[in-house]
Length: 372
Image 1 (tube, helix red, strand yellow):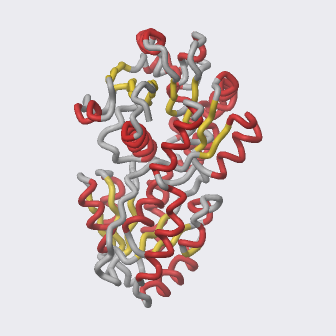
Image 2 (cartoon, one colour; image 1 turned 180 degrees about the vertical axis):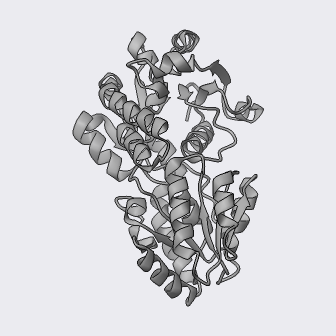
Image 3 (cartoon, rainbow, N blue to C red; image 1 turned 60 degrees about the vertical axis):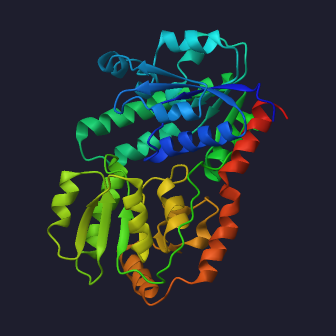
């Protein structure tokens, strides 16, 4: 591929380290596009993580921007996640270098409300955002946050029509592809989530505990962790909840002798837990996109128990044991602890996960943007 292909990528956060949800998709997309010879101009918003020299390995240039006033953003008719990323310098830099623009999520699309670009524009949709925020509201116990999430969902539903202005939409799951294709037509393409795609060979055929991992800053993950504590608290099974610090969850785990909290500081520590766990029990209360925690577990761990909202319409249903209720989860747990994780299970996964190849996804994106 010639080295004259240039692309702007506008990220909602600094995509390194790749240690949570959407940022994992952004980082490994950048990495794979770089390997295909694309010259990337990365624009990212700086607020809760420092600037990263690592990104300069894969980008021709990295631009950083501050987010706008929180108060002004909250009371805007534009969704908070978008208005908070309003930045005139970003618009100026995008127009200075004429190249296609890939916006990461509705979060970063404010420039489309203020200007028309000569080059084509694309968006990677990370969620059906109004559904996602409605789900957050359902999981949230704090009344003020619940009201904020509901208001944001309403704004996002209305704002989503901005997608009529882009030339292409890259959806992140079959479920979301169906929604966006029905709403915005043929310009929508399903591009599987980008991820590390690293298989860890399971030397041990059996583990001795159940693992749940997730970002416990997210209300849905907090609700899932508390649900699983309730499922396993009176059982003989060992449950490990792995995440960054969350004092309320840590305090809850300390009430039970068979439930433990592991603080995850590095990807390597999580990979060790994946390797040693016998079962990953994954629960979500909102059906949005595809959960990176599911792919991580499929690539790096043994058996998986998941509820319907976690696996439905992902194409990965037959790689997991389905369970929705407390009784069903305990029944599946008993069944799986009676088994060893065989080589045939590993090969079955390898074959199925070929369709989630980040290299193939990167080639598909470039063929659309650069019309090869």
